[in-house]
Image (cartoon, rainbow, N blue to C red; front, side, top):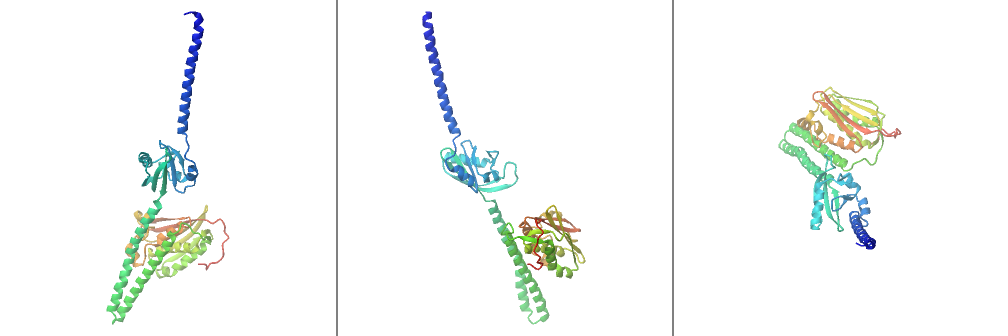
Length: 384
């Protein structure tokens, strides 16, 4: 080829190749930009703000089930961990929504996070959010279902426990009528009738008290209370029964310790522990009621020399109507509600109650409460 044509041809060829490359790069850039816009598109306007203020758990999932937005409750429930969806059950619900386009609602029992043994029962609803996203809302029903189960058990237990004294009252009334001509028999049956009526009244009162305690989580009207007041009132309420059974009640320790709470509830809790100790102690035994305050915790211990509690029953003693010795409890009028009342009264004060026991050696029940920050307490030992 003539060298005079070589330079123009080369220039034209370079222009064509360069233009083609520029065109390809421009096309690729536009496609990449569109892909980036699709991948990083935000959720519809206003959804972010709604998710942030939800009291229930709320999630927004993209087509790959990546969590685009999560409410604080969804993280607290363990539905999201390190920004990722934890449970396959929710991912499957989202997939069904994408296929059908229709909302899906299910009740799921899910673990609380990837490593937790605790489970939550959630009412979960998934629905489309725009063209690409799926909105998931979850309402916690765990406590509601637990309370329903507790209510059913409670009613069943009440029916069983009330059946005995009510039946006894009916039988004694018939016996009184049949023995109307025998004064000695009438007196004997009348005493038994009074005993059963008292037992029925006591069970009813304890059921009312326990229901009141379970109706709230905390003591609202709290005030500084000294352990000296609580111990003195609780011991006085048990003094007659203790003397009648030859049981000695001994108090001691840091009785000037102060907690914030409801004095009447605390007295009831300690009274029940002392009454329980008297019931299971032999004649002539000593029961110690001691108070200590260490590192911001006030502990009230009730130690007896009674029959003790078998190891396999220790974890159950705070259950409603549970008795370690049913025959003995019924003979002494015990309802099986006393320790359950103790547990709820103490929990409502932000504390806990613990038990140590050994069969044949006795038991120690310990109430633990947060110590009050101030020692300025109203002086009113007769306040109820």
